Length: 119
Image 1: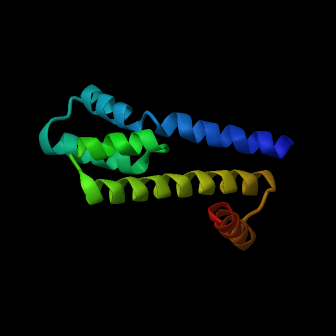
Image 2: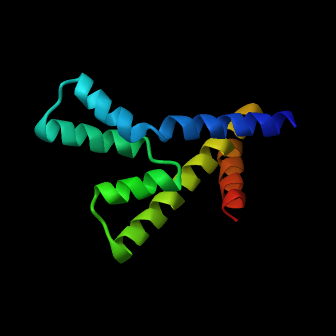
């Protein structure tokens, strides 16, 4: 039960920080007073480092990119898949840390855990 609560806390933390990534990336760029290519580069890198975690943010990004039809569907599907993989990896990393695994044992555990989460 304790492990379940820890995993849920980690997943909740990942969802809460990444869901606002697009807004925070823009606000961070504003705070740094970036403009033009520097701003665009900063925002792209920031969004890449903080991928969206739910379907609504994936839909919003697709709309921002002015995608429609098959391109939008493909983008949203990939976005949601990437977000799911990110949260599974974060959860598995937390479990490995809780078990105090390191090196090859940690890598093996995380790989199996992520595969099980995807199944």
